[in-house]
Length: 279
Image 1 (cartoon, rainbow, N blue to C red):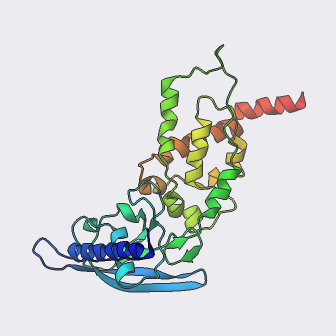
Image 2 (image 1 turned 90 degrees about the vertical axis):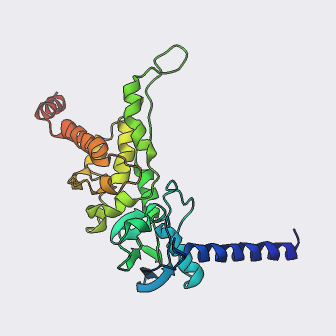
Image 3 (image 1 turned 45 degrees about the vertical axis):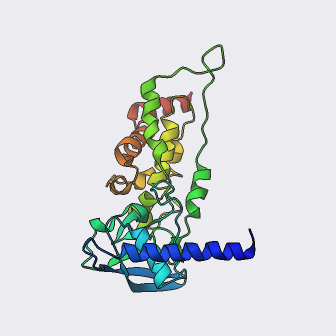
């Protein structure tokens, strides 16, 4: 395509976006409805909230409003997003103080009589505006002992397992790594125990490995010490904010806590270990 053709296509895209923005500002009665947004602007050195107003319409989500603010008032506003369908986990932020995916938070569900507050996740260092540095999470994942399958139990080199055991771990595979559960966890958000606690997202990951019918790795010692599972006091905050409705606390964290107790605090097991050391 020639440079002139590219310019023409770009102009069409811009004009189309402008027409869409104009349409989105019209209500059913043809009147424009506007809403206020308090958006955090800044970087690692500091920042503050700035207020913007934009047209809103039925069906819009917070991410739509942020994109409209970018187009109209703040071209340099930084925001991370990708799929806009609640599956990539990129647009995590805090809306009115609650960790949410911006693309899944409908304006209809918010009180637009007051300014909607949009800020970056508080559990991670700010990079710029609504973007945070979540690289710590990927470093944590590397620390977790990897999947270690048992020896195949069939002559053809395959395994046999119960369907119920397979089903048990499928829920954990829905995680999109939006890190909203990490953000709402008070151990990370309020107490900054990032060096001692891996957080609910990675306790789910450990559960997916520990409960897998083929895995034979024992991670109980790491859960108790390096992974810091004792810090979790099962408030279920993580479960409440999960966009995939994973039952994080009841189905992942509590069973892992029980394994740690069985392994390290069960009096009979402790007696057996003591006897083995003496012998």
